[in-house]
Image (cartoon, rainbow, N blue to C red; front, side, top):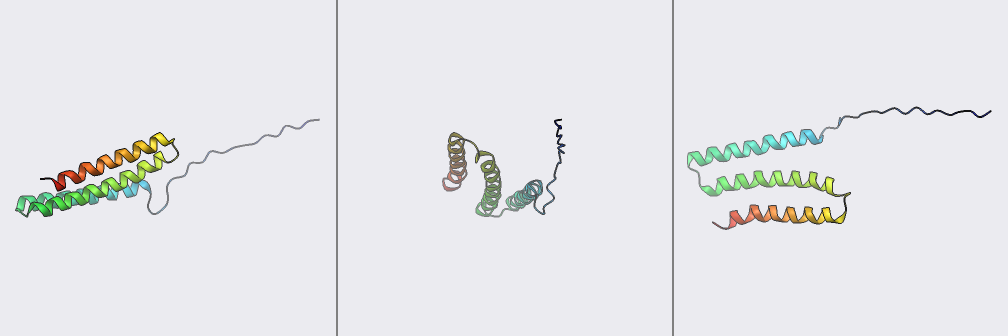
Length: 105
């Protein structure tokens, strides 16, 4: 007699229980960038030089670009080479788009 073997699979879901989950990093980054923008707005209203205001805004923008580029690379890494080229081109365009207005007045 042949015996039938049955296997039981269980589907488990895991939550990011680590100290620094993606959602937590995103939230704290958003709060930090918002604070930098608020400080730069207050400095602008008080009459502080435009260099300090632009520097704070540049730092906030750089933080956001870094976080988003890391997350985008996680998405693109397993994709074909076309996606990686699109990622690099997009990142270069964003960096140039941020740097050029700061350099050219």
